Image (cartoon, rainbow, N blue to C red):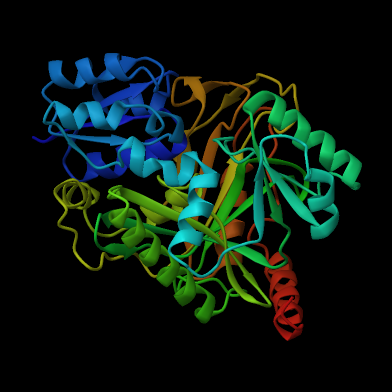
Amino acid sequence: MIKVMVVGGGAREDAVCRKLARDGAKIYSVLSNLNPSILSLSTDRLIARETESRTIVSYAEENEVDLVFVGPDPALATDLVDSLIEKGIRVASPTRKAAEIETSKAFMRELVDKYKIPGQVDHRVFTSTSGLPEYLAELGDYAVKPLGLTGGKGVRVKGDHFRTDSEGLDIAARIIGSDGSVLIERKIIGEEFSLQAFSDGENLSFMPVAQDYKRAFDGDMGPNTGGMGSITDSDHGLPFISKSAVSESKEIMLQILHAMRSEDREFRGILYGQFMETSGGTRIIEINSRFADPEGINALFLMDDSLLDVLFGISDGKLSEHYEFMKKATVLKYVVPPGYGSADPEVVELHVDPGIAGQGSEIFYASVSGTLSDIRTTRSRSLAVISAAESIPEAAEITDSVVNRIRGRFHYRKDIGTRESLDQKIRRMESIRSASPP
């Protein structure tokens, strides 16, 4: 039996482990939390921080694993993948140099500029506040971003998270003070979408288009989070995103992949682009180097082909052109502890009867410990509940019915995937497309 080591202890890695186990792999897990689902699937496990590369490499050698998959972005920012490759161990994740497409927003923007890749957003990196007030005034509306990893929670957008240039300047100055630099980008208007692809360094095989819901509360209100849920549609597009925007995003990702190869940063792993359809075309929000969370769970839930075969194809540089995904809509909703997204979320106990997820639904365990039935949350996301159906609203209703049978105190977004939410997005994009390009 093939031994696969999976690094990471969240719901995304739970989805990876379940798929690999169904494909016949023997799972060796590396995680910092006692995720009961991952542990139940594992032949053996190492409890360690995912960034402890030396310890993890030793564990892989001791257990003579055949293949390694690294889930979390902080681990990809270390020398873990490079060290495994040096030891002759197959890895289906990008090297540290390749992962810089995500770990450095400045590098990504510079690469897009250098190779004249479409989809660029007006931006500038500042290492001091000199010239910063003038640039903020020039842009009018803008986003303030740390250059490194923030878990989806570090971006602050004028009009959404603060109101005045004075506040924007203070936020940027604090980031410069802590990180040494800050990225300022022009604010763009439209609908975001996520496109993920398997990459063998030269070719991409795309997964269904998805959308993540970042804000903590219904109506896209409240603070940004790591993601409260996500949707996909049965045609593998989204009803409010045009086919031309999806085509443009695929071409952008291919150009980025080839640019990376030209820069001696061959990318093998999961390439994930976050884009926005605007009145002026498709724009790049971020490019990432791993499965999205939660959107990656939607893709894995729908995947018909063997993930084990795909990961070997990635590591060996020999992917197929196309992999099969079910023609179903999916809606995923995260169950989170009360106060998640704030500075002080609660730690609570939840009871889950695994049988409440019937055919067409599944519950993935995230940043929790305990058993499959009785879990203790942390201050992060707890459970990812996903369902498939013929339409997004139908899938949302099924997911809600499962969530409502979980016992305990928790929060989740009720509006994800509803007909009302979709109709609002459709009307909004119709209005945006009819507007003159900025």
